[in-house]
Image 1 (cartoon, rainbow, N blue to C red):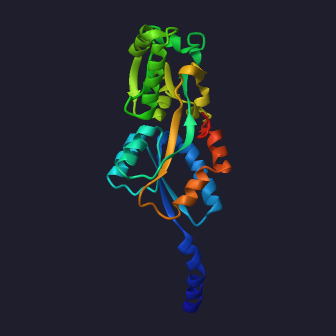
Image 2 (tube, rainbow, N blue to C red):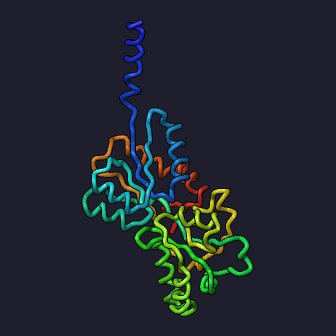
Image 3 (spheres, helix red, strand yellow):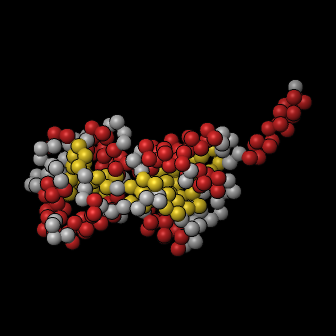
Length: 255
């Protein structure tokens, strides 16, 4: 029996040597899509083990600064990535995906809400992202763009701002408040509306010329594991990009 076990170990040694455990730190808005993508990767490379860590981009950047063992970092904005690059903690980032903002509301408000202008109505409860996290930063950029356009103006945006009753640290918390009926409307990513549950909400397009393009850069960390190159290449593959597209993300090359 001992000889048989020894033979099995010798046979398995090459595959064990090729196995890798790779850690991806990724923005929480990527949760469902990235899980699907990494499942596809592990189907192709079953010896590899992918460990996913999801949180806000700023929080993940802080964890990496504090020595968290990440191999890849995917941020929902460029500022968190630039911070790490400036400190020499990541290699050169590349745009992996894009996203857009959408206005969502309770279905029963369809006769009351048809454009972003309608968010200025009295007694309307609006939830947005905290300005310190990507979804909040993009929302504030949207407001600034609208405020600078005479067709909308600063007065309208100020009235909308007065209806903000909550600023969340995660976009999923915005969706949760809407699904629980705690608020009337919210601003989220278009990728957040691809679940069967979220599709119950009313979707209202935002003015395209003022809707900021959310960029998701990816970078390998300094000191990454060797097999990280293979994983990074897979994220840009047509197979992976098809999975991302099914969840509402745009290819990183789309402007």
